[in-house]
Image (cartoon, rainbow, N blue to C red):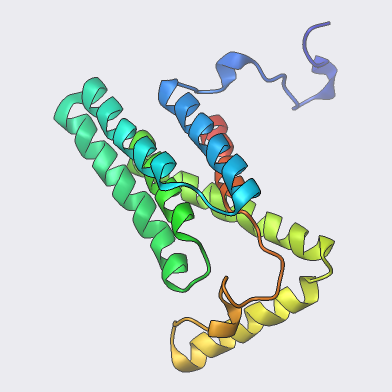
Length: 190
């Protein structure tokens, strides 16, 4: 019996052909995995990895699609960089995370870069809740979000120094892990 029982109803077996995976997805999963390993170990994502992956994405897209492919790579890189630049500007996300999403966007193109960012945000939120709960920080995390929203309502959207990555006393999440999870979801669902 190689597949799941079909009597389960709407649950269907997952076959390799059900995943729309091409060479760019495989490379993106590899890069995201490397970034995740380095981020978990050092809390940094090296520029040689992010910029190297972006340059290779531009080259790959150019070789496979000419100038149109190169334009899609540039637009994907820009979309990836812009989406994560807002949390970065508010000191809630590291620069390596922005560069990683941009590099993956160069490989995926603008539409999948948006999906990658959305899946990453969902994964990041769920993982942040789990990490906060594990470290007994969940109540403080919810209070901090409430204080941040109140501050933004009164003063406008700006950095709140006590709630930035540099100054927060809460547990830190290596955000390359949610990016890897978002990349897996993008590969599987897109």
